[in-house]
Length: 383
Image (cartoon, rainbow, N blue to C red):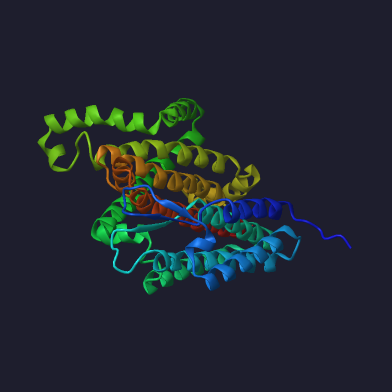
């Protein structure tokens, strides 16, 4: 009997084997700035743990290649990710002498490749299981709890990124709060302005013909150029108006970042509102008219609820996009996790870059899952 192979699993296996056999699992550096030495999985861990790790990851790779049940593939994917999380936490105690406080241990390419491969296996299994939105939210909560437990246990405290966090803990949470404020603040402003503008564009073809092309042009401006364009007018405004300066509106800082993010956010919100309202069947609107509903009642009780999934899709695009773009706002003093990214680049400190990049990716990933679930739930209500 010939075993059936899974196409996605073959890709997962190739990446996992390449990461396990040809790439370093961890990097040991004399200090945070000097280039380090790559260590294989066997060199990074005690013999027993290395044997357990290599054995279980090899079995997981075989399961990924074979066409097995989605539930088994999900368990193997999640189990492999947890195993990698445990193994990388053991490395510092294995390779760093107890009296050496300068040495740094960080995950290397092999770790990241295997984590990516088994994350793909997990995602593929979730897609095959066709889990509902509540089940996906439960899995997200489970992942957050698992990470919180590992962080709380101190198992990762020896890793370089956690040492960078220990040095910058207060600043990390301050910049994290600013990152979220900028992403959500610009989104809220875009919804407040963009939703009525989208409704008006849907009702008025002339306004739509002017507004959407203008917003399209704004969307094509590169983010760095957009931030730069904000500096001069806001700097002049601050110079001419003490009130604006007292409110924090200056050429650099939070104000230009917020305005640039707001401008970027308008097109998805306005365009999706127009499309969503356009997809509401005419017969439904006529039925509402026949029931004696006023224009406002039809809009708020019939058209907007039916258009909600499409509008939420635009909001999802904006939020994920803004979480990423806020990172670049650090270049003009906007703050956020990008502060660590650019400081790390300037100091050639990879761990500091990761301290800014990893939570940004986690935030974008979480926002995407939450809003995907909200979109699916709203679609079910519409049906």
